[in-house]
Image (cartoon, rainbow, N blue to C red; front, side, top):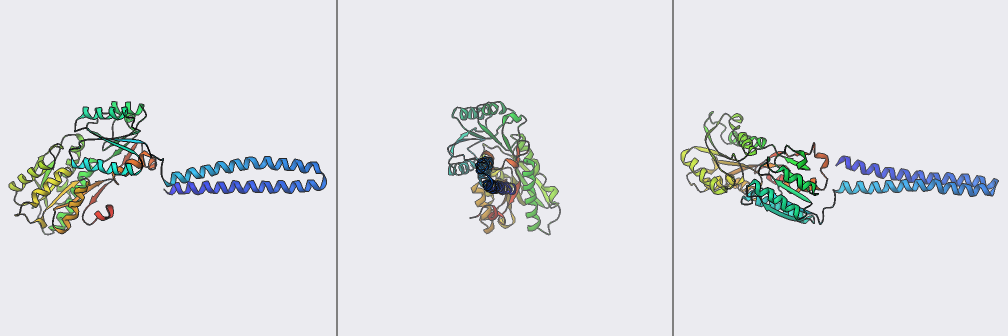
Length: 380
C-alpha cells in the first residue's frame, strides 16, 4: 500500500512539474516575443508561433501525467472493478457445514461487490469436480475458485478453463502444473495442525501447571483422505513435543462425509475408554463440533478442565469458541487459515494483492483463535 501511495504522489508531482514547465516555457516565449516586437514586428509573430509549439508538447505531457496519476489513484484505492463479472466456487463437499459456511460468506462478499456468484458441489469426488469446472466454463465464468478434491486429476480441466479465458484460483494446495492456475492460495496443512497442537499445549500448561509429565490424556480425531489431511494430522501429533504433560491415548479416523455425527460418536467412545481424558484435537470443524457436543452432554465431566480444539473458522465454530468463555462450550480454540477466504480471493481476482503473490502462490498464515483473541479478528 505504501508503494501505491508513493506512486500516486509521484504521479501528481510529475503532473504539477510538467504543468509548471509548460507555464515557464510560455512565459519565456512571451518575454522573447516582447523583446523582438520592440525591434521588429515579424519576429514577434514567430515568437508567438514558437510559444504555441513549445506549449503543445508540455500540455500533452502534463495530460499524460494526469492520466497516469488518475490510474494510480484508482489502483491505490482498490483493484479492477469486478461488477457484473461471474465467479464460480467448486466446493469440496457442501454436506460439510464448513463449506456451506464458506460458500455463504463468498456469496455475501462477492454479490456485495456486484459479482454474480454460483457454487457447485464436488461431493468429495474428483470426477464430479472436473464436471463442475467444465460446467462453469460453459456458463461463461470469468473466475473459478476450486477447493481441490484430488490434486493429481484436476489440472487438465483447469488448463482448459484458463484457455477459455477463466481466471483460476486454487485453494489449499499448490498444483504441480502451473499452467492449471493463475494463483494458488497455499496453506501449510502441517502448520495448521502444529498450530492447533501448540494452542492445546498452551491451554494444558495454563490449566494444569502442576501436572506431572505424561499425565494429561489427549485424544485425536483424524482424517487421511488425502495428502493434505495426513499432513495436518501429523501436525496434531506434535502436541507431545510442545508439552511434556500431554500423552496421546487414543485416535480415531473420520471422513469428511461422516460429518459431525461421527465426531460425536468417536468422542463418546474415547471418553468411555479414557475417563481421565482432558483434551480432544480434531482434524476439522465437523469433528470439532461433534466432540464438543459429546463432552457437553456428559454430566460426569468437569467442563472447566476439558478442551476441544479444531481448524477453520466457520460461524458455528466461532460461536462455540466464544461460548467457552462462560462455560457453555469446551471448544476453546480454532486455527484461522489466513485473513478470510472471500476477501483474499476477491483481492487476488481484482489485482489488489498481486504484489503478495510469489511464483503464482499466495501463502496464508495460520492464526490461533481463542476466546481472548477472537474479537480482534471477528469484531461484533
